[in-house]
Length: 314
Ligand code: CP
Ligand code: NVA
Image 1 (tube, helix red, strand yellow):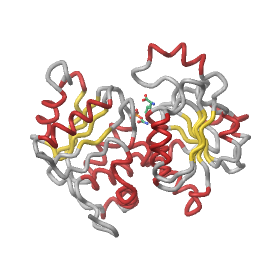
Image 2: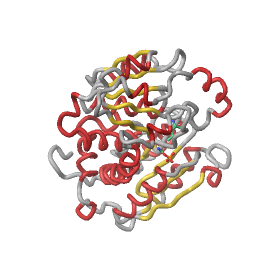
Image 3: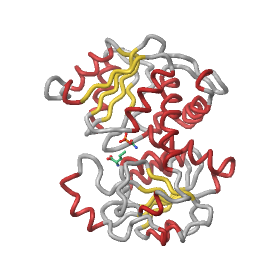
Image 4: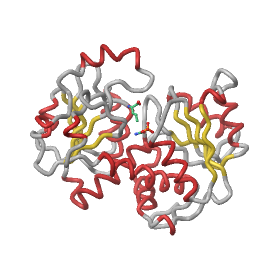
């Protein structure tokens, strides 16, 4: 069996052409986006909390004519009430797209494989896993392009902190879009060799360091995320100690170029990974990022349901 479903477990599933098509759809006036979800359902399964992802996904579904159904992980009990495969096959009986935020990235792979194995053309979309956050990275690319315009490829983005799900998707998306990146993390929290190779395989320049100032030096954008992600709460004390000195604050921002912007996927912990004066200050574009989550999601849902008919359509 198999299907032609456009699964998106991380940004690289889009391919460079697909990435541009999704962003082109995201930039369309919402009134002109093909309403590919008219009278169709979109399942939104959440094993973890969410503010931005849930709201942007629900409203993006409605904008495409569809009906979102929010499902808490405990309700369907993935691998407790029934297997991830059976949850996926069941939701595919009702929905045009299966979106899920999961504890373990492998759950998404199992859902994808179950649907492909059944020949069901329902795409699986990652709403955040421990490995990747592609929907966030799409909004981040929109934000960088809006801010820097055509010169974005000459404006390095420095990610300071945990080389986590948000970093991995951001670095992949940036590499696919020709934006140079740097990542600064303490020992033990940096990218794996496989991550670095994957990011570089798309041609993007990537600097890896354990020195936040070296990463920030001359950067056009500083990006950070929480030091303790959802599911890592038991590690919080060790992480607070390990990440001392990695706060994005005014001193670190001083290493970047004078017009540098500051990004954060949110939620933010003021006084930990970012200082209040920076996240709430004039260089911060975090609310533009949050707003772009909805535009990015509308583009992504339209794309996975075949809505793109512009240049290079396939
Ligand atoms: N940035 C982000 O994904 O936010 P939520 O966890 O609130 O969805
Ligand atoms: N890295 C964070 C991102 C939250 C949007 C987490 O996984 O909790």
